[in-house]
Amino acid sequence: MSVNADSKFIKMTVTPIPRLVLSLGIPTTISMLITNIYNMADSYFVSRISLSAGGATSVVFGIMSILQAFGFMFGHGAGSKISRLLGEKRVKEANTYATTGFFYSLACGVIIAVSGLVFLEPLMRLLGSTDTILPYAKDYGFWILIAAPAMTSSCVLNNILRYEGMATLAMIGLTTGGILNIILDPVFIFVFNMGIGGAGLATALSQYISFFILLSMFVFKRTQSKLSLKYFAKSLKVIGEIIATGLPSFARQGLNSVSTMVLNSQAKMFGDAAIAGMGYVARASSLIFCVGLGIGQGFQPVAAFNYGAQKYSRVKKATVFTMIFGALFIGAIAIACFVLAPQIISLFRNEPEVIQIGSDALRIQCVFLAFLPVSVVATMLFQSIGKSLLALVISCLQNGLIFIPLCLILPRFIGILGLQISQPLSYLASILISIPMLICFFKKLPQDCEQ
Image 1 (cartoon, rainbow, N blue to C red):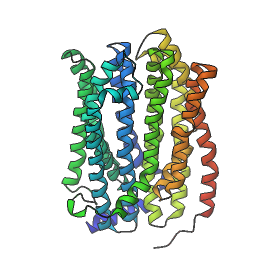
Image 2 (cartoon, rainbow, N blue to C red):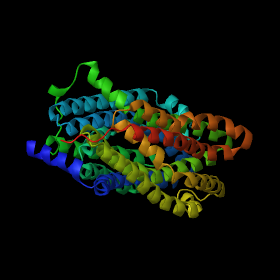
Image 3 (tube, rainbow, N blue to C red):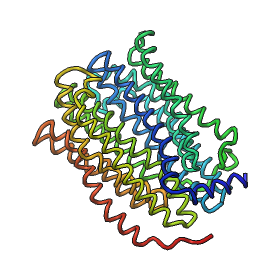
Image 4 (tube, rainbow, N blue to C red):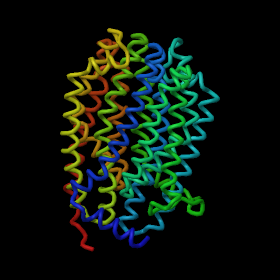
């Protein structure tokens, strides 16, 4: 273990920044692409059933955002602390944060599952379901709630692996489940005639398989940190640090969930076609966004580890490289999606109204997505090094505090266009606020500490 810890320390503090960030970011990006592709696969296959069924996946997406909010809060909170502790060569203390974050996330998943199943119909209506969408949303949401414990705890296992610099192992767990989901969707929906419930069952099975694959990495001691009840922290100090560090992630995903509810609620006035069309845009733009998020998550352990090791110049180099690479990569994808927007939306539904609403919204999103790595990397930098308040501010601005008021106000004056431009405008505001924060941070960075 000592040799392994020393070699990991050398890797994280000596490897050239571009190679290190990409070696950790590419597996994470692949994982996130597969995850988003199987979410899109759910939408694609379910949309073959009916327009209302397609709208149900947009409604239930709010539940998945809630689960991811808790999972990422504990995962990023524990992972960031673990990476900094490993950078300081305090391996034993990392076990406490790994174990505590894992069991708290598992408990949250169970609580959400039980509560959601008891109040299933009111929950679906709260998420924006119409009377025609409700039966489909209940069938699909039932299985998503069954998978809730696996979803929340898998986020923690995945992030611990990433923050330890083992993104490839994390990728194996996530992509295996994602590929299985894509295969099972048409089998359960069409071959076994299970309808939208089959898509939900496929998702639930794939989530539990991913969970057990990720857990096996810890059981077979592929990681530096360990999971054991003897390391579980009963004091509030440890869980308080995890929650404080992970709060920006919770805010990001939680506000995404609230934003989805608000968007669906506002889209009701324009009919099921608007709910479905804007939902498909959310899926497509999420696929683009996850590329930047994946590279950013490869950057996070580099920033946290080197900050803990007092290699501050490497933190700055990693930040600049990740922003430039992310902007170029996402920019290329955004251009392609801008040109092919109608074709992308028509993959889900071929109604002219859905295509018109969706393609216009997607093109507006694409104009701003290329600049998004600035705020994404800023959030991840501040979160990784323990400056949670700055990360929280940017996350909230980017994912809801600006979007929700715009979404509630603009459609009253400019109709469906108000829905279509609300998210891009919130992106722009978060970018403009992130830039001076980053400049100020870099000016205050101390010199490297020679070890």
